[in-house]
Amino acid sequence: MGAAGLCAALLLLLLGVPGRPQPPPETPPSLCDPRVIERFILEAREAERGAAACGPHCDLPEPVAVPDPGVNFNFWRSLDARSRAREVAAGQAALAAAVLRAREQLRDPRVRPSLDRAHGAARSLARLLRGLAAPAPPTPLPPPGPVRVRNVPRLLGVLSRFLRGKVRLFLTDSCQSSALRAVNHHR
Image (cartoon, rainbow, N blue to C red; front, side):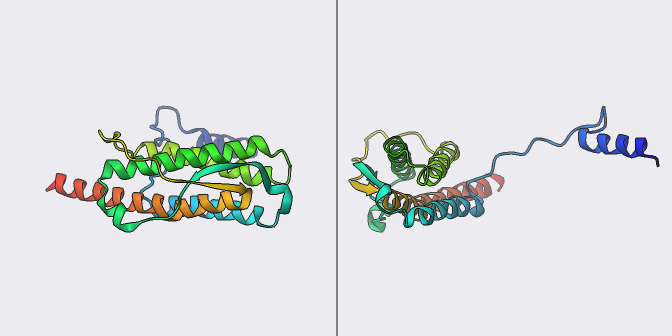
């Protein structure tokens, strides 16, 4: 096969053969795939490590409010699925707002990459969580007690703990419930 034939064959492979069905576009990753949340956690930890030694230029002029990332397991177990979804969504929204506020307050180019990564991850997570979130419960939950942080490493640490705690628990619960519903539906 000559060079022209090889180029034509490569073009057909890359662009597809006319009239032949094309493979479906890739679907977005499922949050029920544990690798997805692990990737978010890894990125949060990398951002946290990237900002860990930044010193005084990572101090925020004004503290930002973030949700308490700790998990009270007795309280968590007492919540229904909608309340858990709401708690995770509210915490995620508060963290995204805190990261955005920190980005506005700090213009130092040494800090920006960590904050930009954290903000991008928070936005991506929000989009993915919308697919699992249940409608808001009829009675609102009290807002989680905000913690105030005064520097970027602490902010990113809260984000990392929130992902490893409440988000991971929520996904585990939601995905197990979805799997059980699917099994029962096929019976």
